[in-house]
Amino acid sequence: MPAKRSGSRKEQRTGANASGPKNGVLDGLRREIDAIDDQVLALLNARGRVVQKVGEYKREQATHIHVPERERLVLDRLFRQNTGPLSNRAIEAIYREIFSAAISLEREIRAAYLGPEGTFSHLAALRYFGSSAGYLPQPAIDDVFRAVEQQRADYGLVPLENSTEGTVTYTFDRFVDTPVKICAETYVEIHHHLLSTTGDSGKIRHIYSFSQPFAQCRQWLARNMPGIEIRPATSSANAAELAAGDPKAAAIASELAADLYGLKYAARRIEDLSQNETRFAVIGLQETKPTGRDKTTLVCSVKDEPGILFRLLQPAARAKINLSKIESRPSRTRKWESVFFFDLMGHAHDPKVSRVLSQMRACCQLFRVLGSYPAAR
Image 1 (tube, helix red, strand yellow):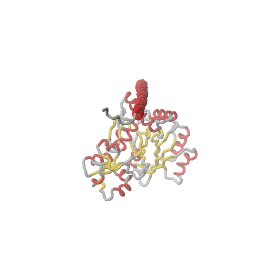
Image 2 (tube, rainbow, N blue to C red):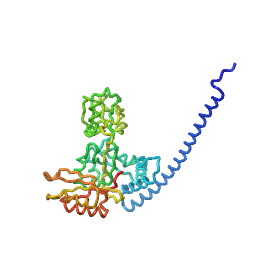
Image 3 (cartoon, rainbow, N blue to C red):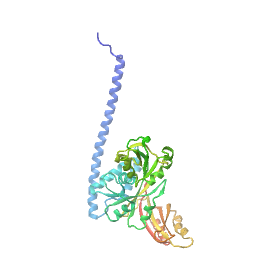
Image 4 (cartoon, helix red, strand yellow):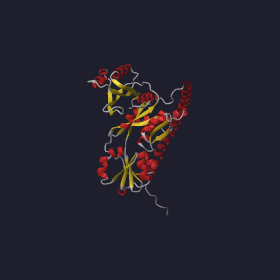
């Protein structure tokens, strides 16, 4: 007697039809993606061949390989044309890698950053310069400046300010006495994670942290890890390195540090404020040309006269130029005197901005433009 079939002929037919066409549709879509990928690859290599010609011209003219203002103009044009579904942020991430690969066809860019590997400065450098650049981790911010000054690095990347903790004062102090310029800026979202070898928060007896990550996670730690000892580290990456060798320890560090040091997540995104960003400056020895959407940073010290600060700021107000940042720091050469840092919107070569800078300079003992560069979106 033949074995009884499970299900009716209609059910079997429906099941077969349900699985077959679905797989056929998916296979068809994948073939379509493969065909598009073939076109993308061919176009990327065609772009690369043109870039090689550009590199030959730059070498003949002895001009800079990396041109931040050109990258900004390319991205802005693409953003205007972008109809989705990819976001402008995704487009920028993709093109940063395209820029990086293209520049490497001309010459490897060397970029210094505050190390070791796995710091947020390292993450910012990777996102700006891409994976094809060469990187030089430095033990201190001063060493990043020195690497650029001595031309051991083409560029450096240094933190300027954090949306939660404010200005990175040492970076601004170093700008007073350096020939380097700000060539570009970039913003990086800062997400802190609690990392350990096991990922089990119950086994954590102490936490390694750099001062700024600890300050940005203080409330979370008080609520979730009360009484746990906080031990100092020289950077978030150093904290991860220490935790990797201590089964009772955890580190407050980045996702990049977790990958580099093989740590597991005991808790993700433990920063007290979700809108936590750090602004970084790309420093170098070149000046950038106007793009139409620029920022100028300058440092000055004023004469000791009544109403001098009013007279210093008045030209920008009259010209309707936005001063987006004003920061004062103690002078390192004279007691009880200050130097002022300004960010204003516009390029120093713009006629209106140039006039304002000239009027401001008349009020100052020290006056120096630290850079005019493309404003990050």
